[in-house]
Structures are given as C-alpha cells and as structure tokens.
Length: 579
Ligand SMILES: Nc1ncnc2c1ncn2[C@@H]1O[C@H](COP(=O)(O)OP(=O)(O)O)[C@@H](O)[C@H]1O
Ligand SMILES: [Mg+2]
Image (cartoon, rainbow, N blue to C red; front, side, top):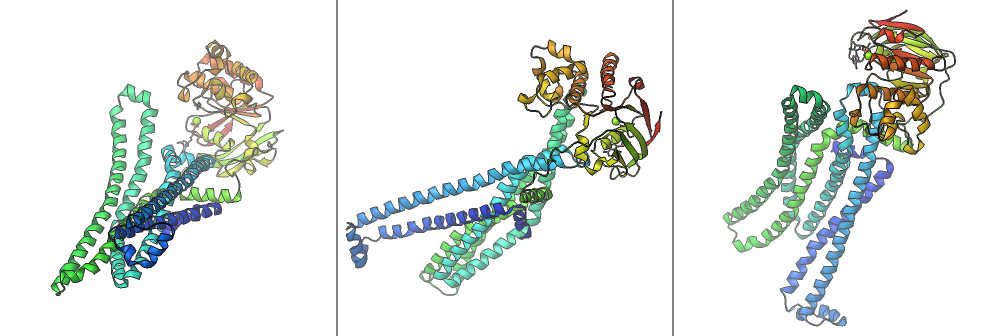
C-alpha cells in the first residue's frame, strides 16, 4: 500500500489534477460499463413477457402517448434506446482511453528527456562509477514503466476497487447476507493470493531489472568491440554472455506472466467449488433443490460479476509489484525532476555566465585527490603555478596521476584537499565561469555520427557554423589539404565514432574542435601521441604559435613534444617536481 502511494510523490501538483481527472473519467467509464450490462437484462425479460402492456396499464398509457401500442413496437423502441446507449458508452470509453494514453505518452516523452538531463548533469565521478547500460535502460524504459506500467495501473486498481465496491453495494440492497458472505470469501482469496505471490513477484522484478541492464551491457560491448571480436574470434564469448543475461531477463518475465495468470484459475476454482459445496450442504441439510435455486441465482450472479473484478485487482497489483524494483531505483531522479519542475528551473543546465577573468596567474595549491573507495591518494600536495600565456608541459610515467590532475583542472573532479585559484579566486567557487575559458583535447576523441564540420563545431546549429573559422582551424590542425581533397569536403560524414577516418585524423579533428572555440586556456591530454612524428611536430608548432595569446597545459608522452614549452612539471607517484 505504501509503495502504491509512492508513485504519487513524484508528481508535481499540476499532474495531481490530471491524475484526479483521469481517475474520475475511469470511474464514470466503469459505471457506464456496469449500466451497459445491466440494461440488457430488462430488455430480455420484456421480450419474454408478451403480456406486459396488458398487465401494466400505466406503462401502456404512457407508451401510447408516443405512438407505441404493440409489444413489438415496444421492443423496437427499447432496442433503439440500447443502441444509442451502447454507442454513447463506447464513444466515451474510446475518449477515456485516448485521454489516458495521451497523459501517459506526454509524460513519457517529457520524463525520458528529463531523466537524461538528470544523468547529464550528474558529476563526472557518478559517470565513472556507473555503466552506461544502466543509464541507457533507465532513459529508454524508465518513464514508460513509471507511467504506463505503474501510474496508470495504480489508477486502474483504484477504479476497479471502487467498481467492485459499487457492484457489491447493489448486492447488499438485494441480499445483505449473501453480500457479506461473498465479500468475505473474495477478500480472503484476494489477500491470500496476494500474500502468497508477493515475494515471488518482487524477486522476479528485481531479476528482470538487473538483467535488463546486463543484457544491454553485453549488447553494447559485443558490438562496441566488433573489430577485436572478429579478429580474436570471440563471437562465442559475447553471444554466451548476452544469452545468459537475456535468459534471466526472459525467464523472469515468463515467471511473472505465469504468476499473473494463476490467480484467475484459483479464483474460479474456489468460487465455483464454493457454490457447489453450498448446494451439497443445503441438500444434506434437507432442503429441496427448488428451495436452493433463488439463493443460488443471486449468489452466482454476484460471484460471476465480482470474479473478474477480483482477478483484475490482483493483476494490477501484481504488475505494480513487478515493476516496483525498477521504479525504486529511479525514484531519486524522478523526485529530483519534480522538485525542478516545481521550482520552474532547468537546474541541469547552468546558464552560460560570465567568464572567470584570467589575467595573471593560475595557482595549483597543495592539491590532493583520491578516488572514492580507493585507499591511496592519486595526488598529494601538488603545487605549481601557470602564469597567463605560458606553455606548461606535464610529464611522468603512466599511472602517475596526470589525467586525474587535468580532470581536476577541467572541473570534472573536485580535489579532496587543496585548491586551484585564478588570480586569487577558487575555480570551484563558480566552475562554469572557469570552464568558459577552456578547451580540451583528450587522448581519444569522441566523434559524433555526423559531418566533419558538425564535429568541429560540436553543438552549434548548422546554420550558425562559420565556414571560415572551420577552414582556419582545419589548417591549424594540419587537416585542411586532406579534407578539401574529399569529394564532399568538410561535409563528409565521419561514421559512428569516426570509423571512416584514421585514428590520427580523428585526433586532429579533436584538436580543430578545441581551437574552434578560441579558448583562453588549451588543455591537451596526450593529444598528439596517436600521431606520427611528422604530424605531431607540425601540430606542436601550430600550437606553439598560440603561445603568448593563450595558456597551454599539455600532457605529453614523448618528451620531445615538449622541447619548446616554458617549463615542465613532472608527476611521479602523485607528487610533482618542476623541471
Ligand atoms: N575512476 C578511477 N577510480 C579509481 N582509480 C582510478 C580511476 N581512474 C584512475 N585511477 C587510478 O589513478 C591513478 C592515476 O591515473 P591517471 O591519472 O589516469 O594516470 P596517468 O594519466 O598519469 O597515466 C592510476 O593508478 C589509476 O589506476
Ligand atoms: Mg592519462
């Protein structure tokens, strides 16, 4: 019950109103359904009673006023009335479904984007510690599950309970004693079945949730490492791992579907045998069959009307239970979306503010860092200065903490001790303002599946891209001649992750991308190590020409790359030495 209400805690107040409207519409729909079934019965009894107009004088009188005098005419009139009722009812039901689906889909679209927004805005450390498969699963199906498989079934469950209650009230009016017996028996069945299956269904929910992320992970990995897979002939391995995860996922779903079918059979078996046992007992007690018929009629009607209701109540409750583990995992993000909606803020996007002015000096002061869950410090007491316009080279063996340091300088990781200041101001006091100065070239460039131009001016709309500036940076990155020799020039598609380009060309696009932003500070993390000596040299020369106007911090694998830098900082076991 508590978990049932939890779904409503993620909804902003506007959505509450929508939910109440849907609930009301559902209830009206349920009543119309009941009326629809109920209306057939009088028609049948009137059809069977030819003398009705003779027996009921008042009715005949009223009917004759509208020109109906025979039994057949009366039936025709009632049939026409029923046709109108059914058309209206079904029109309403169609509208109600549209209303419901529209609500679910609208939210599904909105929440998918907002979930992605939640993840994008999470600190870099969060992303280091989470496999993208889990995040892909959440964005892909989180909002669908939340709205279509939890919220709507919750409303349906509430409607069903209310409808069952109304039918039961009708029964109370007809025969209170039977009504109480029926309510008692059905409640015991519903509670019994729910309790029996609760844990089993939750467990299958947990399994399906975990293994969805697992199979997406193996799918990503097997297609992501396609080259290695083919060369090393590891197809079997990837297929096996994928299959293993998918099997668990599929079996959990299968078990859930089975558990969801079982209640119907149990309810039917219990109710029918209950009725038959009642007959036997009555007969043994000396009642004649004719005595039992009237009671049995009411009982059977009630049971057969309430049985499908009881079944649906269990099914909705099971569905919600099955999806609950997934929902619980998403809950913090969904709740945070609600808070943002209520504050009417796009909190995940820090508005582009003003730049943190860097006029004089950047000071790295006693910076220390360790990754969470790791005992040893990766950096300890790192201290050095970078005067504006200088070219600082960073060297050191692999694993020395160079990339970690650069991630801190970029504002992706926060130091666990010490600070970095720019003209006396801590960069972490407004990290976005500091980042406005930066451009970064990582060791391996991530290219989007688009054109060269779109990759260089990443995130800029096509019509706003300056071709002139693209040409300038292509020249600086030693790519101009090659790109211009291609039939489609800078509009050439690079393929997913740049598969249609060489590693060196990808890297040079990364450099062009950084230069396109005309940064104040250029940070390179082994940006040229994938290039051949000649290209590396000429790019380094281009970068050197920028020295003086912009500040450069460059990690280099080959010390020769850093010959012309102003000074070098050597990282060794997390400490630094200026050379
Ligand atoms: N996400 C992480 N979690 C835990 N340890 C990490 C993580 N990333 C890097 N490390 C560790 O930090 C140390 C420094 O790594 P890194 O900064 O990448 O070195 P470098 O760039 O100098 O080769 C290494 O020992 C590495 O194992
Ligand atoms: Mg590194």
